[in-house]
Image (cartoon, rainbow, N blue to C red; front, side):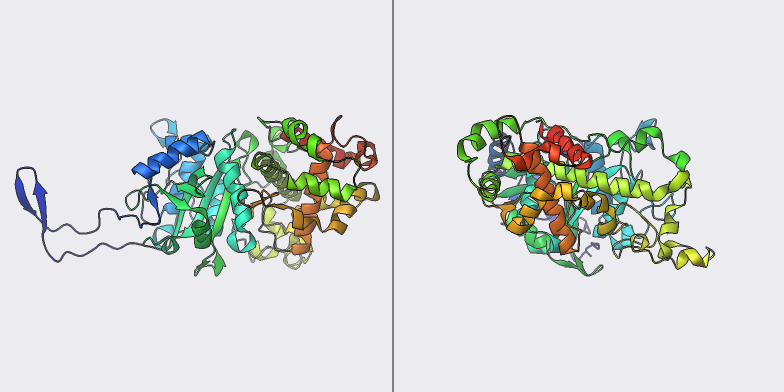
Length: 497
């Protein structure tokens, strides 16, 4: 946190009508950007903006600019960024801001953290700032659907995929927020949060709308340098920083830990299997204009799959990443909802499922329950249970089980034997990660590989049309289970097929 600069002498200012000696003024008035950053309002910054606009790299900019917010305190970069993002996604806070108006700012954010008073959800943040995980919890508690990506668990290619989705997706319904170290960008200070509002593909730059506008203006920064700044270790948590993809739950539904019984779950909010996403651009053009001309349907299935993956364009990656974002959130939400209500709707407080969260006066038999899917996750605080509280193997268990039935394993086993993961990083223009939308908070590499193969299986089935892949027995939709067929139809709807 910045402290006020002490005065040592008076300040002399040149005025239009002569030199004026003023009293000593403490503190600083803004900071000059280092040479590595390009000011948004400079001539080069304006040129980059024009070029990014013409190349479809600014689809997220205008909604963010419309709600641009200066953080209220020097340490409020996280809450300030979150307020700005929530407003840009048109999420209703459900609380009065001023007068009769509902709007987000730092004072209207609510918390699920039982350690903090409801009337002061940002307690301690004023002195200490906010951590990567605390930002995640705060976003979920205020109506956001959010997937965190620790830099230590991801790659630069996956970060580029996230940039594509947030900055080039025409539906304008996903935001990208970065938690990074200013010092790596040759700026003063350490940890900081701000949203990414633009992407310049030719010069490999992103536009940071810096919420500390009293310190630095908005600026363009090299993607690789920003990535390096997220890889630094936060001394408070002992973990790397990272980035988030943030969207809006259907019907403003947020997972909150104050849901204690079945009456709190409305019929509307329980319909979690509805299709969350729709595509403004169909993959049919990609199939008709590209795949049909380059894929030899008489070749081996392995050759066909590799050809398809290696020909995927950034636009297609954009659609796939949005779909994987939605499908992983759907399964996590399913897991949380199922943990709230057990058989015959015998509801239990969510805290009862996690022994370390339980107060001392709770029955010892519950505290000693060591079921794997009831263990708290190391990345969850002792006071807030959210979508990521359930271990990955439990939260995504239903998804993984889709491919355990013999009827579903034919294509999945081929992908497993091919070591398909090596083909999911597309080396085209700037390297991009194909399935960049699922949570890479996953710390189990085996589970991660299973998910990648599962997503690839569904994607390949979704590509099957009357013209494309329909003659290959392996893609006969009658050979798969009804559960997998539902996911294939879900993907087709997301892709506009």
